[in-house]
Length: 396
Image (cartoon, rainbow, N blue to C red; front, side, top):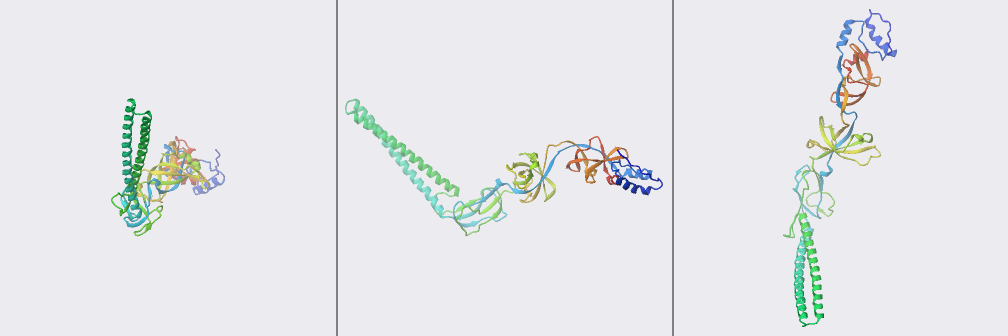
C-alpha cells in the first residue's frame, strides 16, 4: 500500500486540514485514515466520535426487484348484470355504492316474452299429455295384437286356420311393437320440451301461474354496485348491454409488470410482499396467482397478478402499489445503513484494520432489510466497520 508523508511541523496543528486535501490531491486515497497524531487530545476526541460494530451475518436474498403496479378488481369476482330478455324497466332498487348480497333483487321489468315463455310451458305440457295418451293406445294395440297372435298359433296347431293367418298375426305384432317404440320416443321428446320450458321459467324466476308476471333481476354475487346504467321507464331491447357492474371488493389483486430479466424471481404460488402508497407504514402480503404467457414486446416485461391474502377490504381499485420480489434468503454479511459511504462514485465502507486505523473499501451491496444492508462482495463477516462518524474519516 502506497503512503505519502509530507513534512509537517508539529507546532502548527491547524495545517492538518490542508494536509488532508494535499494527500487527496497527491493520490493518497488508499492511505488508511488515522486520527491526527499532532495533537493527542484531539486525536482521542476524534476517535471517541467514531463508532465501530462487527459485521453481522443475516439471512437475506441475493437479488431483489421492486415492480410498480396497481390494485385491480379480481376478474373472477366481477359481474356485469344484464337483462335476461327485452322489456320495460319498472323499478331499479339499488344505487351506485350500495352493498348487495347474492340473490338480492336489483331490477324489475315487464316483458311480452313472459307470456311467450309461460305459453311455451303450457303447450309442452299439453303435448306431453297427448304423447302419453298415444303411448297408452299403442301399448293397448300391442297387447291385443300379441293376444291375437297367440290365438292364431293355437288355432293353427289344431288345424283350424291356415298358416298364412298366423304369419299375418305375427306381422301385426311387429308393427304394434314399432308403434309403441315410436310413441315412447314422442313421450320422451315431449318430456324434454316440458323440462326446457320449465328451466326457462325458473331462470327468469317465473312459474306457470299467469301471463302478466314481472321479471326480477337478482345479484349474481355479493359485493358493491360500481356502475349503474339504467333508470326506471327505459325499454331495453339489447340484452347484451350491461345494466350495472357488481364487484366483490373483498377480493382484490395487484397487477405489475415484471421485467423479463427478473422473471426468474417469480413463481406461481410464491409469497410476495406488497407496498402501497396509500399505506406507507404497512406491509401487505399475497400470492402470485398468474404470470402472463407472453412478454410485452414494447416494455419487455410480463404481467404478474398477485392475490392479496388479507387486508384487501381497506384497499381501493387503481391504488398505486409495489411488488417486492426476491430469491430465497441465504446468510450474507450485513451492515447498518449508516456504514455505507458513497465516495468518488463508488459505494463502500470504512473497515477497522486495527484500533485507530481504518481503511475505505468498495463493496457491492444487496437487498436492504429494515436498517441493514446485505453485502454481496468486498466484506467478510469477521470484520468490523465504522457505523458512526464516517464523515470524520471521509475528510481525513
